[in-house]
Image: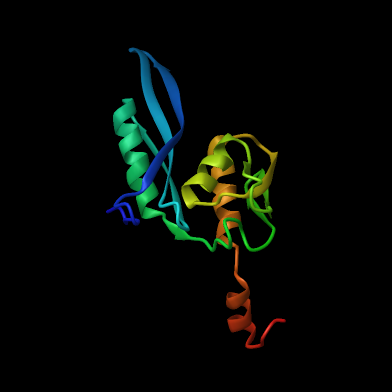
Length: 161
């Protein structure tokens, strides 16, 4: 079940399609895996991973998985509220807010997540592995850790000046 944005549907991006071959006694058995990112470009983003014997089924499974894993992130004036590190296994992604007009300075996997989320200005740097799945997971984890000033004020019970 896909949640809808103002235009009526989520934007879907296929980040990577991988072909796997398994050699057995009867010959070669091929399968495919797909990594997808979905978002409403208004603060909701999710990712999914699917495997199947052919590409369309793998893509369909990954999109279904991505729709289930949607998370909300805070966006302040087109960027993130503060800098944050996102980590997953050996992938580490540094996310830093940027001034208006900077654009999205990010690699391919992280860029697809940020575009789907609706962030327009951000600086990123990826450290460690370049595995697309782990970089996407680290980016989403970093975005999930973001909190706005109002969230912190409510959590602490004091007014931040």
